[in-house]
Image 1 (cartoon, rainbow, N blue to C red):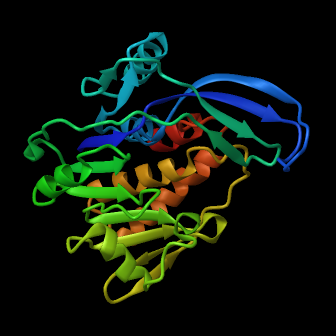
Image 2 (cartoon, rainbow, N blue to C red):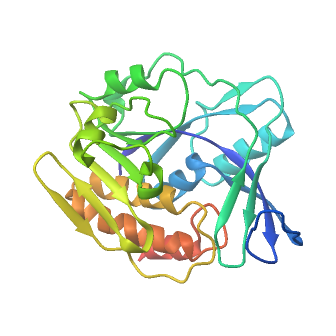
Length: 279
């Protein structure tokens, strides 16, 4: 078992199920799929909890009933939410617009600024994962690099993400990378970067290092809901790295977790992943 700290969002998702694919200027009917727990914190953290790790979440929600619900739901499912900050105002729903082919469009309000406080004692943690735009991420990462494994998702812009392992998708990279892939990864992850992993859906993923590039295939799955697939991939990768596996073995495990995620009609991992881990 590893001690893993996630700095990621905790959301309340509202699912709208459309009757046909989105098209500009179209008219659509929808079914309200209800409210469910979501965000990178839950989507990544719950699988790690099921894998036997101690997982704590650093996030921010409003001081309202929806914020109470999100924290209670995450805590009930095993996430340590004692480091989740409460801010004045409402916790706004994230709208997940789902089309019949399982693809989703996310509509969310502008998030208020989230500032990280004094970093914890990193000697108590085995891994630190960033998937957030919180202020203070860089300083937290720099203080953690010498003490625990640091994994980060590429941000929506080119802000630095000091880390040992940087994760991105091909769609994240479109129109942003004029450098060679490894050089771009270093420009974000810094000199501590060991691996730059770029996922590409059903085409699998590539890992770039200073001297090499390797490909790891995806695991076939029947797509029901793609929400949270990248988060599940990250969780599987973190789980394997904490167990001492190689980067390609960790990517293969991430692909298995992502396959379970897309075959489940939820943002958080489903029962199939839990059964796989128990087996």
